[in-house]
Length: 112
Image (cartoon, rainbow, N blue to C red; front, side, top):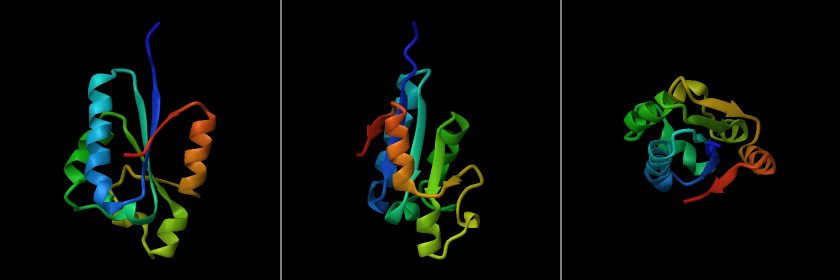
């Protein structure tokens, strides 16, 4: 039996974006069958904007199957659109609800 963990990573602080991305890289590198989703809301959105210092690592992670989702509530409250993010970033209605749902589905929760 092959281990196929699913990990949801919580990013709500701009300052932790690089750390979260490195954690995701480590997971994707060390665990072949891992499924990783990074849920971003609040100040975390500033760390994953297009053209920012983390874009290169984000591109690499997206190419390896890491999923990035941004909270629509946060986007509305900050007057941001999906044009502010790389094309592979998706939205969910509520970042907090996404975190709760993933945990209820049995995903491992990581908050660096």
